[in-house]
Length: 203
Image (cartoon, rainbow, N blue to C red; front, side, top):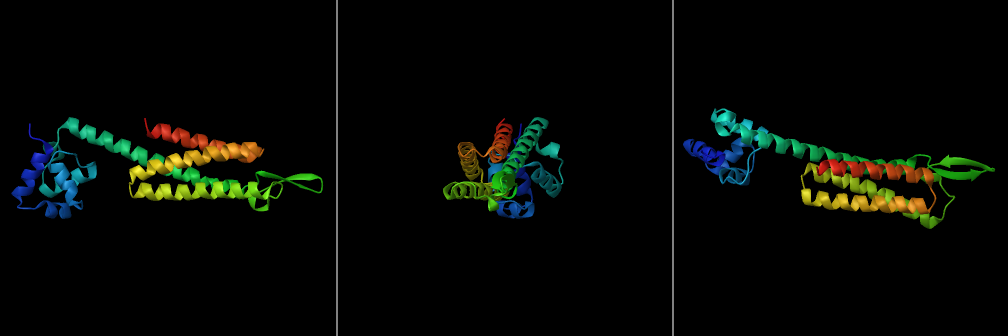
């Protein structure tokens, strides 16, 4: 049975094209074409459609049904992973709630009011500084996470996710020790949501 890579190479040579020229026609890199032709990988569904249209052959002529299912499943897993990565970044951006929502208690005229972090003065200066550092850092991690997801930098994404979970765990512990019940509830929920997304992503 002729492999996809061999078929692609035959089709390319029948048109008198170099790998670079085919890559330009398909809007992919020459490395991708080389990888496909050497049977070290398969194109995604969109690239398969481009190849099929360019050479005027059916996708079934290029790949067996089994290989096509394999590619579709792989692409679905990749899409699900990217969605989870974006959601994890979004959850970190939600750390803004810990700054703007009235989650902290302030005593005024013998009455207790809830205020946001900007107006919170009932704890030490050191505690407030730690809160700001933790929350702003989480938001920065969320932004970086989304950028890395767009550019598909998988290794760096994993590192950022680990750092994000560690910082979130530290924030939960610190807020619990500082006896901030509402803030610790919010950060704990965000931490759990990220944990669930990571589990789903790695299934």
